[in-house]
View 1: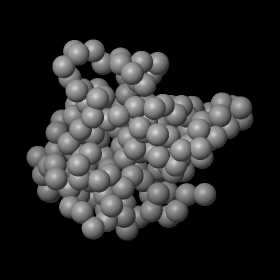
View 2: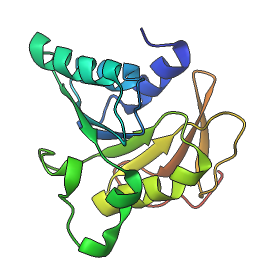
View 3: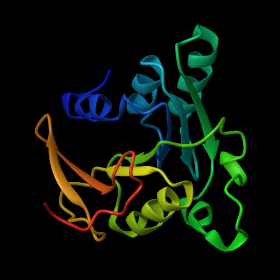
View 4: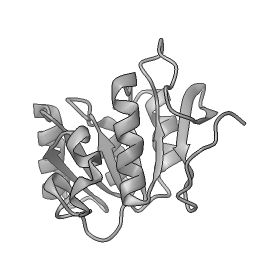
Length: 165
C-alpha cells in the first residue's frame, strides 16, 4: 500500500521508463508501484530490506508490466566519477539509459552524492527529505499532493536546477 504522499511521488515519476531509487531500505512501495505502472526500477541500498527483496521477487514472479530489481550498493561509491565508467556495481545490468534517480526521505548527507549519481547518468533527479531538513543542494521546490518534492535535475534536459523558482 502506498501512502497518499508516496502516491503523489509515483504519479510524478511514472512517465520515466527507467529509474534508480537510492536508499530504498525496507520501503519498496514507490519502486513497486512504479514497476506496476510499467517502469524499470533498480532499487539500491547498502542493505536492501527483506520487504524490498520480496517485492523484487514478486514483480518477477507476477510478471508485472515493468520490472523491479533490488541491488546492494552505496550511493557514495556509485556517484564517484573517478572510474569514468557508468556501468559499475549494482547498475551494471541496467538495460539502456536511466531517465531518473529519486529518493524518499533523503537525508542531507546523501543529497550531494545522489545528485552526482544523476549527473553521472545524465538523468533527472528528484527527492523528498526527512521533513525537518532543508535540501543542501540547489533545487526547485514543488508540491505534489501536498508533499514537498525537490527537483535537483530536470527531466529531459538533464540540467542541474539553479535553485528555487
